[in-house]
Length: 538
Image 1 (cartoon, rainbow, N blue to C red):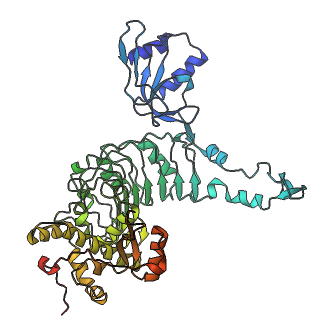
Image 2: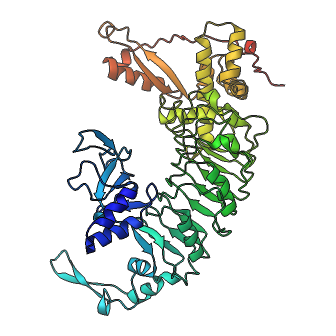
Image 3: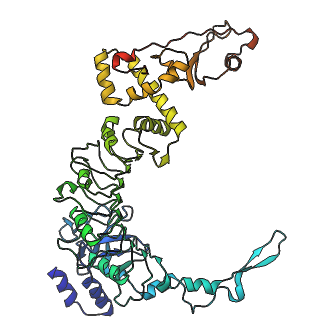
Protein backbone atom coordinates (compact mmCIF):
# COMPACT_ATOMS: atom_id res chain seq x y z
CA UNK A 1 0.00 0.00 0.00
CA UNK A 2 1.05 3.67 -0.33
CA UNK A 3 1.07 3.95 3.45
CA UNK A 4 3.53 1.08 3.70
CA UNK A 5 5.81 2.67 1.10
CA UNK A 6 5.70 5.93 3.03
CA UNK A 7 6.77 4.16 6.19
CA UNK A 8 9.68 2.48 4.46
CA UNK A 9 11.01 5.58 2.71
CA UNK A 10 10.63 8.13 5.50
CA UNK A 11 12.46 6.08 8.13
CA UNK A 12 16.15 6.68 8.61
CA UNK A 13 18.08 4.24 6.35
CA UNK A 14 20.06 1.44 7.94
CA UNK A 15 21.45 -1.91 6.84
CA UNK A 16 18.48 -3.64 8.49
CA UNK A 17 15.96 -1.34 6.82
CA UNK A 18 17.66 -1.80 3.47
CA UNK A 19 17.32 -5.55 3.93
CA UNK A 20 13.66 -5.16 4.81
CA UNK A 21 13.08 -3.07 1.71
CA UNK A 22 14.85 -5.66 -0.43
CA UNK A 23 12.66 -8.43 1.00
CA UNK A 24 9.41 -6.45 0.61
CA UNK A 25 10.22 -5.71 -3.02
CA UNK A 26 10.26 -9.49 -3.72
CA UNK A 27 6.87 -10.12 -2.13
CA UNK A 28 3.65 -10.45 -4.11
CA UNK A 29 0.79 -10.62 -1.61
CA UNK A 30 -1.29 -13.76 -2.07
CA UNK A 31 1.37 -15.40 -4.22
CA UNK A 32 4.83 -15.35 -2.66
CA UNK A 33 5.77 -18.33 -0.55
CA UNK A 34 7.91 -18.31 2.60
CA UNK A 35 9.17 -20.70 5.25
CA UNK A 36 10.28 -20.42 8.86
CA UNK A 37 13.31 -21.77 10.70
CA UNK A 38 11.59 -25.11 11.29
CA UNK A 39 10.81 -25.65 7.61
CA UNK A 40 7.08 -24.87 7.74
CA UNK A 41 5.87 -23.34 4.46
CA UNK A 42 3.10 -20.82 3.85
CA UNK A 43 1.75 -18.10 1.59
CA UNK A 44 2.16 -14.39 2.38
CA UNK A 45 -1.37 -12.98 2.54
CA UNK A 46 -0.61 -9.54 4.04
CA UNK A 47 2.25 -7.04 4.04
CA UNK A 48 2.16 -3.95 6.23
CA UNK A 49 1.94 -2.65 9.82
CA UNK A 50 -0.02 -4.55 12.46
CA UNK A 51 -2.57 -2.57 14.50
CA UNK A 52 -1.61 -4.29 17.77
CA UNK A 53 2.18 -3.99 17.37
CA UNK A 54 4.30 -1.82 19.68
CA UNK A 55 5.94 -0.16 16.69
CA UNK A 56 3.14 1.16 14.46
CA UNK A 57 5.58 1.73 11.60
CA UNK A 58 7.19 -1.72 11.50
CA UNK A 59 6.18 -3.84 8.51
CA UNK A 60 5.06 -7.42 9.11
CA UNK A 61 4.14 -10.28 6.83
CA UNK A 62 0.89 -12.12 7.50
CA UNK A 63 1.41 -15.78 6.56
CA UNK A 64 -1.17 -18.49 6.08
CA UNK A 65 0.60 -21.78 6.81
CA UNK A 66 0.03 -24.99 4.87
CA UNK A 67 0.22 -27.04 8.07
CA UNK A 68 -2.81 -26.16 10.20
CA UNK A 69 -0.88 -27.00 13.36
CA UNK A 70 1.78 -24.35 12.70
CA UNK A 71 -0.20 -21.15 13.27
CA UNK A 72 -3.16 -20.34 15.53
CA UNK A 73 -3.87 -16.82 14.25
CA UNK A 74 -6.88 -15.95 12.08
CA UNK A 75 -5.36 -12.69 10.79
CA UNK A 76 -7.31 -10.33 13.04
CA UNK A 77 -5.97 -8.19 15.97
CA UNK A 78 -7.27 -5.67 18.49
CA UNK A 79 -6.05 -2.18 17.63
CA UNK A 80 -4.20 -0.74 20.62
CA UNK A 81 -5.40 2.80 19.79
CA UNK A 82 -9.10 2.23 19.12
CA UNK A 83 -9.61 -1.10 20.91
CA UNK A 84 -11.48 -2.26 17.79
CA UNK A 85 -11.06 -5.52 15.91
CA UNK A 86 -8.92 -5.08 12.79
CA UNK A 87 -8.64 -7.92 10.27
CA UNK A 88 -5.49 -7.84 8.16
CA UNK A 89 -6.09 -11.19 6.42
CA UNK A 90 -8.12 -14.38 6.84
CA UNK A 91 -6.58 -17.71 7.72
CA UNK A 92 -7.21 -20.88 9.71
CA UNK A 93 -3.52 -21.19 10.58
CA UNK A 94 -1.84 -17.79 10.36
CA UNK A 95 1.04 -15.87 11.89
CA UNK A 96 2.59 -12.42 11.74
CA UNK A 97 6.34 -12.40 11.14
CA UNK A 98 8.95 -9.66 10.91
CA UNK A 99 10.42 -9.37 7.43
CA UNK A 100 13.92 -9.85 8.80
CA UNK A 101 12.93 -13.38 9.86
CA UNK A 102 11.38 -14.35 6.54
CA UNK A 103 12.98 -16.95 4.30
CA UNK A 104 11.75 -16.45 0.75
CA UNK A 105 13.73 -19.40 -0.55
CA UNK A 106 16.86 -20.03 -2.58
CA UNK A 107 17.47 -20.32 -6.33
CA UNK A 108 18.02 -23.65 -8.03
CA UNK A 109 21.63 -23.22 -9.17
CA UNK A 110 24.77 -25.26 -9.59
CA UNK A 111 25.94 -24.58 -6.02
CA UNK A 112 22.69 -26.01 -4.61
CA UNK A 113 23.01 -29.11 -6.76
CA UNK A 114 26.63 -29.59 -5.74
CA UNK A 115 25.71 -29.25 -2.06
CA UNK A 116 23.29 -32.14 -2.54
CA UNK A 117 26.07 -34.33 -3.85
CA UNK A 118 29.83 -34.64 -3.25
CA UNK A 119 32.35 -32.79 -5.41
CA UNK A 120 35.20 -34.76 -6.93
CA UNK A 121 37.78 -32.57 -5.19
CA UNK A 122 36.23 -32.82 -1.71
CA UNK A 123 38.35 -34.53 0.99
CA UNK A 124 37.93 -38.30 1.06
CA UNK A 125 35.73 -39.74 3.76
CA UNK A 126 37.81 -42.93 3.81
CA UNK A 127 41.46 -42.16 3.00
CA UNK A 128 43.36 -45.36 2.28
CA UNK A 129 39.95 -47.09 2.13
CA UNK A 130 39.51 -46.87 5.92
CA UNK A 131 36.64 -45.06 7.63
CA UNK A 132 37.42 -43.07 10.80
CA UNK A 133 35.08 -45.36 12.73
CA UNK A 134 35.62 -48.78 14.25
CA UNK A 135 33.40 -51.73 15.15
CA UNK A 136 33.64 -53.69 18.38
CA UNK A 137 33.72 -57.46 18.02
CA UNK A 138 32.14 -59.98 20.41
CA UNK A 139 35.54 -60.46 22.04
CA UNK A 140 35.85 -56.74 22.77
CA UNK A 141 38.43 -55.93 20.11
CA UNK A 142 38.22 -52.88 17.82
CA UNK A 143 38.04 -53.60 14.09
CA UNK A 144 38.53 -50.93 11.43
CA UNK A 145 35.81 -50.46 8.77
CA UNK A 146 36.91 -50.48 5.13
CA UNK A 147 35.18 -48.46 2.42
CA UNK A 148 36.19 -49.22 -1.16
CA UNK A 149 35.23 -47.40 -4.36
CA UNK A 150 34.61 -43.94 -2.90
CA UNK A 151 36.23 -42.13 -5.85
CA UNK A 152 34.27 -44.18 -8.35
CA UNK A 153 31.02 -43.43 -6.52
CA UNK A 154 31.75 -39.71 -6.71
CA UNK A 155 32.10 -39.97 -10.46
CA UNK A 156 28.52 -41.27 -10.60
CA UNK A 157 27.28 -38.51 -8.26
CA UNK A 158 28.24 -35.52 -10.39
CA UNK A 159 25.04 -33.55 -11.14
CA UNK A 160 25.75 -33.17 -14.85
CA UNK A 161 25.94 -36.96 -15.23
CA UNK A 162 22.87 -37.91 -13.22
CA UNK A 163 19.62 -38.98 -14.85
CA UNK A 164 17.59 -38.55 -11.62
CA UNK A 165 17.80 -35.73 -9.06
CA UNK A 166 15.65 -35.25 -5.95
CA UNK A 167 15.60 -31.80 -4.29
CA UNK A 168 12.61 -32.09 -1.96
CA UNK A 169 11.91 -29.50 0.77
CA UNK A 170 15.00 -27.42 0.05
CA UNK A 171 13.27 -24.04 -0.13
CA UNK A 172 13.71 -23.58 -3.88
CA UNK A 173 11.71 -20.59 -5.10
CA UNK A 174 13.30 -19.76 -8.46
CA UNK A 175 15.95 -21.02 -10.89
CA UNK A 176 19.28 -19.57 -11.99
CA UNK A 177 19.67 -18.57 -15.61
CA UNK A 178 23.23 -19.91 -15.55
CA UNK A 179 22.17 -23.54 -15.16
CA UNK A 180 23.39 -25.44 -18.25
CA UNK A 181 24.91 -28.78 -19.19
CA UNK A 182 22.22 -31.09 -17.76
CA UNK A 183 21.41 -32.99 -20.93
CA UNK A 184 21.34 -36.35 -19.10
CA UNK A 185 18.71 -35.39 -16.52
CA UNK A 186 15.38 -37.16 -17.14
CA UNK A 187 13.67 -37.18 -13.72
CA UNK A 188 13.45 -34.15 -11.38
CA UNK A 189 11.72 -34.17 -7.99
CA UNK A 190 11.07 -30.67 -6.57
CA UNK A 191 8.27 -31.58 -4.16
CA UNK A 192 7.65 -29.38 -1.12
CA UNK A 193 9.56 -26.29 -2.26
CA UNK A 194 8.51 -22.62 -2.57
CA UNK A 195 7.81 -22.37 -6.30
CA UNK A 196 4.74 -20.19 -6.77
CA UNK A 197 4.58 -19.32 -10.46
CA UNK A 198 4.20 -21.23 -13.72
CA UNK A 199 6.82 -18.98 -15.27
CA UNK A 200 9.40 -20.55 -12.97
CA UNK A 201 8.15 -24.00 -14.00
CA UNK A 202 8.67 -22.99 -17.63
CA UNK A 203 12.26 -21.94 -16.85
CA UNK A 204 12.90 -25.26 -15.12
CA UNK A 205 11.61 -27.21 -18.11
CA UNK A 206 13.81 -25.10 -20.37
CA UNK A 207 16.92 -25.65 -18.25
CA UNK A 208 16.58 -29.44 -18.43
CA UNK A 209 15.73 -30.19 -22.07
CA UNK A 210 15.62 -34.00 -21.74
CA UNK A 211 13.23 -34.05 -18.76
CA UNK A 212 10.42 -36.63 -18.94
CA UNK A 213 9.39 -36.75 -15.25
CA UNK A 214 8.61 -33.64 -13.18
CA UNK A 215 7.31 -33.56 -9.61
CA UNK A 216 6.31 -30.15 -8.23
CA UNK A 217 3.87 -31.47 -5.60
CA UNK A 218 3.10 -29.08 -2.69
CA UNK A 219 4.39 -26.08 -4.63
CA UNK A 220 1.52 -23.56 -4.75
CA UNK A 221 1.87 -22.66 -8.42
CA UNK A 222 -1.89 -22.14 -8.74
CA UNK A 223 -3.76 -21.98 -12.02
CA UNK A 224 -2.36 -21.43 -15.47
CA UNK A 225 -3.36 -18.08 -16.95
CA UNK A 226 -5.94 -17.61 -19.64
CA UNK A 227 -3.26 -17.57 -22.29
CA UNK A 228 -1.02 -20.52 -23.05
CA UNK A 229 2.45 -20.07 -21.47
CA UNK A 230 5.30 -19.55 -23.87
CA UNK A 231 6.67 -23.04 -23.39
CA UNK A 232 5.77 -26.57 -24.38
CA UNK A 233 7.36 -29.86 -23.52
CA UNK A 234 6.76 -32.86 -25.76
CA UNK A 235 9.09 -35.06 -23.69
CA UNK A 236 7.51 -34.84 -20.24
CA UNK A 237 5.22 -37.86 -19.81
CA UNK A 238 4.75 -37.83 -16.00
CA UNK A 239 3.64 -34.71 -14.11
CA UNK A 240 2.83 -34.55 -10.38
CA UNK A 241 0.72 -31.53 -9.33
CA UNK A 242 -0.41 -32.87 -5.94
CA UNK A 243 -1.55 -29.98 -3.67
CA UNK A 244 -0.51 -27.20 -6.03
CA UNK A 245 -3.37 -24.81 -5.26
CA UNK A 246 -5.18 -25.39 -8.57
CA UNK A 247 -8.75 -24.06 -8.37
CA UNK A 248 -9.93 -24.08 -11.97
CA UNK A 249 -10.53 -26.96 -14.35
CA UNK A 250 -9.46 -24.58 -17.11
CA UNK A 251 -5.92 -25.40 -16.02
CA UNK A 252 -6.48 -29.03 -17.06
CA UNK A 253 -7.36 -27.93 -20.59
CA UNK A 254 -4.19 -25.87 -20.81
CA UNK A 255 -2.02 -28.66 -19.44
CA UNK A 256 -3.12 -30.71 -22.44
CA UNK A 257 -1.61 -28.06 -24.69
CA UNK A 258 1.57 -27.43 -22.67
CA UNK A 259 2.34 -31.13 -22.05
CA UNK A 260 0.73 -32.92 -25.02
CA UNK A 261 2.51 -36.25 -24.42
CA UNK A 262 1.50 -36.80 -20.80
CA UNK A 263 1.11 -40.44 -19.82
CA UNK A 264 0.59 -39.97 -16.05
CA UNK A 265 -1.00 -36.88 -14.43
CA UNK A 266 -1.58 -36.36 -10.71
CA UNK A 267 -4.02 -33.61 -9.73
CA UNK A 268 -4.79 -34.89 -6.22
CA UNK A 269 -5.82 -32.47 -3.46
CA UNK A 270 -6.69 -29.57 -5.74
CA UNK A 271 -10.09 -27.90 -6.08
CA UNK A 272 -11.69 -29.13 -9.31
CA UNK A 273 -15.29 -28.63 -8.23
CA UNK A 274 -15.94 -26.69 -11.44
CA UNK A 275 -15.07 -29.67 -13.64
CA UNK A 276 -18.60 -29.58 -15.05
CA UNK A 277 -17.88 -26.13 -16.52
CA UNK A 278 -15.44 -27.49 -19.10
CA UNK A 279 -16.67 -26.35 -22.50
CA UNK A 280 -14.70 -28.83 -24.54
CA UNK A 281 -13.78 -32.48 -24.18
CA UNK A 282 -10.28 -33.08 -22.92
CA UNK A 283 -7.67 -34.33 -25.37
CA UNK A 284 -4.71 -36.04 -23.70
CA UNK A 285 -4.32 -38.57 -26.49
CA UNK A 286 -1.53 -40.38 -24.56
CA UNK A 287 -2.84 -40.10 -20.98
CA UNK A 288 -3.24 -43.51 -19.30
CA UNK A 289 -3.34 -42.70 -15.56
CA UNK A 290 -5.18 -39.77 -13.95
CA UNK A 291 -5.21 -39.19 -10.18
CA UNK A 292 -8.02 -36.90 -9.01
CA UNK A 293 -8.03 -37.91 -5.34
CA UNK A 294 -9.81 -35.44 -3.03
CA UNK A 295 -10.58 -32.87 -5.75
CA UNK A 296 -14.04 -31.93 -4.40
CA UNK A 297 -15.82 -33.89 -7.12
CA UNK A 298 -19.42 -34.71 -6.19
CA UNK A 299 -21.11 -35.99 -9.35
CA UNK A 300 -20.25 -38.61 -11.92
CA UNK A 301 -22.90 -37.52 -14.42
CA UNK A 302 -21.91 -33.83 -14.53
CA UNK A 303 -18.21 -33.90 -13.67
CA UNK A 304 -16.49 -37.25 -14.18
CA UNK A 305 -18.18 -37.76 -17.55
CA UNK A 306 -16.08 -34.88 -18.90
CA UNK A 307 -13.16 -37.34 -18.83
CA UNK A 308 -14.96 -40.04 -20.83
CA UNK A 309 -13.52 -38.97 -24.19
CA UNK A 310 -9.91 -39.48 -23.11
CA UNK A 311 -9.56 -42.53 -25.32
CA UNK A 312 -6.28 -43.77 -23.85
CA UNK A 313 -7.29 -43.50 -20.16
CA UNK A 314 -6.75 -46.83 -18.36
CA UNK A 315 -6.54 -45.90 -14.67
CA UNK A 316 -8.78 -43.36 -12.91
CA UNK A 317 -8.34 -42.56 -9.20
CA UNK A 318 -11.30 -40.79 -7.58
CA UNK A 319 -10.54 -41.49 -3.91
CA UNK A 320 -11.96 -39.31 -1.13
CA UNK A 321 -14.48 -37.49 -3.33
CA UNK A 322 -18.12 -37.10 -2.32
CA UNK A 323 -19.44 -39.23 -5.20
CA UNK A 324 -22.60 -41.14 -4.24
CA UNK A 325 -23.24 -43.11 -7.44
CA UNK A 326 -21.89 -43.97 -10.88
CA UNK A 327 -24.32 -43.01 -13.64
CA UNK A 328 -23.04 -43.82 -17.09
CA UNK A 329 -25.07 -42.04 -19.72
CA UNK A 330 -25.40 -42.92 -23.36
CA UNK A 331 -22.35 -41.67 -25.22
CA UNK A 332 -19.95 -42.05 -22.28
CA UNK A 333 -17.24 -44.25 -23.67
CA UNK A 334 -14.28 -44.81 -21.31
CA UNK A 335 -13.32 -47.40 -23.92
CA UNK A 336 -9.88 -48.13 -22.44
CA UNK A 337 -10.65 -47.80 -18.71
CA UNK A 338 -9.31 -50.82 -16.82
CA UNK A 339 -8.93 -49.65 -13.21
CA UNK A 340 -11.23 -47.45 -11.08
CA UNK A 341 -10.30 -46.51 -7.52
CA UNK A 342 -13.17 -45.03 -5.47
CA UNK A 343 -11.93 -45.57 -1.90
CA UNK A 344 -13.35 -43.12 0.64
CA UNK A 345 -16.27 -42.04 -1.57
CA UNK A 346 -19.96 -41.79 -0.57
CA UNK A 347 -21.15 -44.85 -2.50
CA UNK A 348 -23.96 -46.13 -0.26
CA UNK A 349 -25.49 -49.03 -2.23
CA UNK A 350 -24.45 -51.69 -4.72
CA UNK A 351 -26.86 -50.29 -7.27
CA UNK A 352 -24.84 -47.07 -7.14
CA UNK A 353 -21.93 -48.69 -8.98
CA UNK A 354 -23.88 -51.19 -11.09
CA UNK A 355 -23.22 -49.15 -14.24
CA UNK A 356 -19.52 -49.98 -13.97
CA UNK A 357 -20.38 -53.40 -15.39
CA UNK A 358 -20.96 -51.76 -18.76
CA UNK A 359 -17.34 -50.61 -19.05
CA UNK A 360 -15.90 -53.03 -21.61
CA UNK A 361 -12.34 -53.36 -20.26
CA UNK A 362 -12.75 -52.77 -16.53
CA UNK A 363 -11.06 -55.50 -14.47
CA UNK A 364 -9.77 -53.71 -11.32
CA UNK A 365 -11.90 -51.97 -8.67
CA UNK A 366 -11.12 -50.47 -5.26
CA UNK A 367 -13.88 -49.58 -2.77
CA UNK A 368 -12.07 -49.34 0.57
CA UNK A 369 -13.61 -47.18 3.31
CA UNK A 370 -16.73 -46.20 1.37
CA UNK A 371 -20.16 -45.65 2.90
CA UNK A 372 -21.13 -49.00 1.38
CA UNK A 373 -18.29 -51.11 2.79
CA UNK A 374 -17.68 -49.32 6.10
CA UNK A 375 -20.28 -51.48 7.90
CA UNK A 376 -18.71 -54.69 6.56
CA UNK A 377 -15.51 -56.42 7.40
CA UNK A 378 -12.73 -56.27 4.82
CA UNK A 379 -13.23 -59.94 3.88
CA UNK A 380 -17.02 -59.60 3.56
CA UNK A 381 -16.75 -56.52 1.36
CA UNK A 382 -14.20 -58.22 -0.86
CA UNK A 383 -16.33 -61.34 -1.32
CA UNK A 384 -19.37 -59.23 -2.19
CA UNK A 385 -17.46 -57.32 -4.87
CA UNK A 386 -16.08 -60.55 -6.35
CA UNK A 387 -19.50 -62.20 -6.53
CA UNK A 388 -21.39 -59.19 -7.89
CA UNK A 389 -18.90 -58.22 -10.60
CA UNK A 390 -17.79 -61.27 -12.62
CA UNK A 391 -15.39 -59.28 -14.82
CA UNK A 392 -13.43 -57.86 -11.86
CA UNK A 393 -10.23 -59.85 -11.38
CA UNK A 394 -8.42 -57.40 -9.05
CA UNK A 395 -10.19 -56.13 -5.91
CA UNK A 396 -8.57 -53.46 -3.73
CA UNK A 397 -5.26 -54.01 -5.57
CA UNK A 398 -5.25 -57.76 -4.80
CA UNK A 399 -5.80 -60.40 -7.53
CA UNK A 400 -8.78 -62.75 -7.29
CA UNK A 401 -8.08 -66.48 -7.45
CA UNK A 402 -10.47 -69.02 -8.99
CA UNK A 403 -11.01 -70.70 -5.62
CA UNK A 404 -11.80 -67.34 -4.00
CA UNK A 405 -14.32 -66.48 -6.72
CA UNK A 406 -16.05 -69.82 -6.40
CA UNK A 407 -16.42 -69.45 -2.62
CA UNK A 408 -17.56 -65.82 -2.97
CA UNK A 409 -20.27 -66.73 -5.47
CA UNK A 410 -21.50 -69.61 -3.30
CA UNK A 411 -21.76 -67.37 -0.26
CA UNK A 412 -23.49 -64.68 -2.28
CA UNK A 413 -26.16 -67.07 -3.58
CA UNK A 414 -26.66 -68.35 -0.04
CA UNK A 415 -27.06 -64.85 1.39
CA UNK A 416 -29.51 -63.69 -1.27
CA UNK A 417 -31.55 -66.89 -0.92
CA UNK A 418 -31.77 -66.36 2.82
CA UNK A 419 -32.84 -62.77 2.23
CA UNK A 420 -35.63 -63.95 -0.04
CA UNK A 421 -36.74 -66.58 2.48
CA UNK A 422 -37.16 -63.97 5.18
CA UNK A 423 -39.29 -61.75 2.96
CA UNK A 424 -43.07 -61.94 3.14
CA UNK A 425 -43.61 -60.13 -0.16
CA UNK A 426 -45.26 -61.62 -3.21
CA UNK A 427 -43.31 -63.26 -6.03
CA UNK A 428 -43.62 -60.14 -8.22
CA UNK A 429 -42.03 -58.00 -5.51
CA UNK A 430 -39.20 -60.48 -5.10
CA UNK A 431 -38.56 -60.43 -8.85
CA UNK A 432 -38.29 -56.65 -8.72
CA UNK A 433 -35.84 -56.79 -5.80
CA UNK A 434 -33.67 -59.34 -7.59
CA UNK A 435 -33.56 -57.20 -10.71
CA UNK A 436 -32.62 -54.01 -8.85
CA UNK A 437 -30.33 -55.24 -6.10
CA UNK A 438 -29.07 -58.63 -7.26
CA UNK A 439 -28.88 -58.73 -11.06
CA UNK A 440 -26.24 -61.49 -10.95
CA UNK A 441 -28.21 -63.82 -8.67
CA UNK A 442 -30.22 -65.65 -11.35
CA UNK A 443 -27.10 -66.34 -13.40
CA UNK A 444 -25.11 -67.59 -10.40
CA UNK A 445 -27.98 -69.76 -9.11
CA UNK A 446 -28.22 -71.49 -12.49
CA UNK A 447 -24.46 -72.03 -12.57
CA UNK A 448 -24.58 -73.90 -9.25
CA UNK A 449 -27.31 -76.33 -10.35
CA UNK A 450 -24.93 -79.26 -10.69
CA UNK A 451 -23.45 -78.63 -7.24
CA UNK A 452 -26.91 -78.61 -5.70
CA UNK A 453 -27.81 -81.90 -7.36
CA UNK A 454 -24.52 -83.54 -6.35
CA UNK A 455 -25.13 -82.75 -2.67
CA UNK A 456 -28.46 -84.56 -2.83
CA UNK A 457 -30.55 -81.72 -1.43
CA UNK A 458 -33.46 -79.75 -2.81
CA UNK A 459 -32.57 -77.68 -5.85
CA UNK A 460 -34.19 -74.69 -4.27
CA UNK A 461 -32.95 -75.27 -0.73
CA UNK A 462 -30.60 -72.97 1.11
CA UNK A 463 -28.51 -75.89 2.40
CA UNK A 464 -27.66 -76.91 -1.16
CA UNK A 465 -25.54 -73.86 -1.79
CA UNK A 466 -23.49 -74.13 1.40
CA UNK A 467 -21.69 -77.38 0.61
CA UNK A 468 -18.37 -76.12 1.94
CA UNK A 469 -19.57 -75.03 5.39
CA UNK A 470 -22.72 -75.54 7.47
CA UNK A 471 -24.26 -73.28 10.10
CA UNK A 472 -25.52 -75.38 13.02
CA UNK A 473 -26.96 -74.80 16.48
CA UNK A 474 -26.15 -77.37 19.17
CA UNK A 475 -28.45 -77.65 22.20
CA UNK A 476 -27.90 -80.11 25.05
CA UNK A 477 -30.95 -82.06 26.27
CA UNK A 478 -29.04 -83.89 29.04
CA UNK A 479 -30.32 -83.28 32.57
CA UNK A 480 -26.98 -81.93 33.78
CA UNK A 481 -26.52 -79.38 30.99
CA UNK A 482 -29.93 -78.63 29.50
CA UNK A 483 -29.93 -75.30 31.31
CA UNK A 484 -26.87 -74.15 29.32
CA UNK A 485 -27.33 -71.82 26.33
CA UNK A 486 -27.06 -73.46 22.92
CA UNK A 487 -23.96 -72.78 20.83
CA UNK A 488 -23.79 -71.80 17.17
CA UNK A 489 -20.91 -72.89 14.97
CA UNK A 490 -20.00 -72.70 11.28
CA UNK A 491 -18.48 -76.11 10.61
CA UNK A 492 -17.06 -77.77 7.49
CA UNK A 493 -19.43 -80.22 5.83
CA UNK A 494 -16.71 -82.90 5.99
CA UNK A 495 -16.70 -82.90 9.81
CA UNK A 496 -17.14 -86.44 11.18
CA UNK A 497 -19.71 -87.45 13.81
CA UNK A 498 -16.89 -88.38 16.17
CA UNK A 499 -15.39 -84.88 15.95
CA UNK A 500 -18.83 -83.37 16.53
CA UNK A 501 -19.30 -85.51 19.67
CA UNK A 502 -15.91 -84.37 20.93
CA UNK A 503 -17.04 -80.76 20.52
CA UNK A 504 -20.19 -81.47 22.56
CA UNK A 505 -18.08 -83.15 25.21
CA UNK A 506 -15.86 -80.08 25.64
CA UNK A 507 -18.73 -77.59 25.70
CA UNK A 508 -21.35 -79.44 27.73
CA UNK A 509 -19.17 -81.88 29.71
CA UNK A 510 -20.84 -85.00 28.30
CA UNK A 511 -19.35 -88.48 27.94
CA UNK A 512 -18.73 -89.20 24.25
CA UNK A 513 -19.86 -92.83 24.53
CA UNK A 514 -23.21 -91.86 26.08
CA UNK A 515 -24.12 -89.19 23.53
CA UNK A 516 -27.00 -89.66 21.10
CA UNK A 517 -27.23 -86.99 18.39
CA UNK A 518 -30.55 -85.88 16.91
CA UNK A 519 -30.82 -83.60 13.86
CA UNK A 520 -33.65 -81.24 12.99
CA UNK A 521 -33.60 -79.15 9.78
CA UNK A 522 -34.95 -75.62 10.15
CA UNK A 523 -34.38 -74.56 6.55
CA UNK A 524 -37.39 -73.39 4.60
CA UNK A 525 -37.51 -73.67 0.83
CA UNK A 526 -38.16 -71.16 -1.89
CA UNK A 527 -39.25 -71.92 -5.42
CA UNK A 528 -36.66 -70.12 -7.54
CA UNK A 529 -38.51 -71.08 -10.71
CA UNK A 530 -41.33 -68.79 -9.65
CA UNK A 531 -38.85 -65.92 -9.71
CA UNK A 532 -37.88 -66.54 -13.31
CA UNK A 533 -34.76 -68.59 -12.47
CA UNK A 534 -34.39 -71.77 -14.48
CA UNK A 535 -32.61 -74.65 -12.73
CA UNK A 536 -32.79 -77.22 -15.51
CA UNK A 537 -30.32 -77.97 -18.27
CA UNK A 538 -31.22 -78.44 -21.92
